View: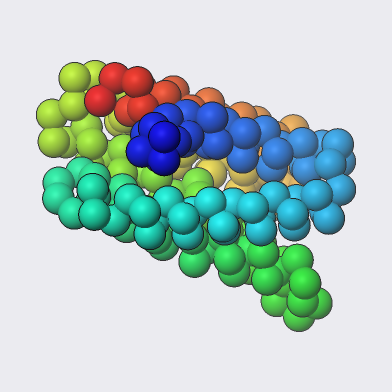
Length: 169
């Protein structure tokens, strides 16, 4: 059962995380809710990294293990960002941009190693980068629409790639 949760959980958790982030940007969920989500994600990532380590020592799975391990640290720093005044926003931004860019490494590696549908993985990576650029442009120009658009591009691209990985790898 734990193995199935590790294999298929990301197909649910990745889109759920991006929905939460987008909802927070739309003021649909409170900062305290986002803090709780970060705590839960930190725990899940830690459990995933520890329990999946033995199965993720070679090839693309090793790359994904590193994405998860570094992602745990990034998420934990984002969690701390909710509880400190000085530097809190910086830590939250690190977590957000970390999760925009970390999966790109895994997607490109998966595609490069000969996945059946490499375009989905390259597409997920490209969507992550383009969405991050759109989000940053929205932040720089104080355009919430660009920020939301960027988040939607990242979330959609990562979801398509991770669902393919979970069910088609």
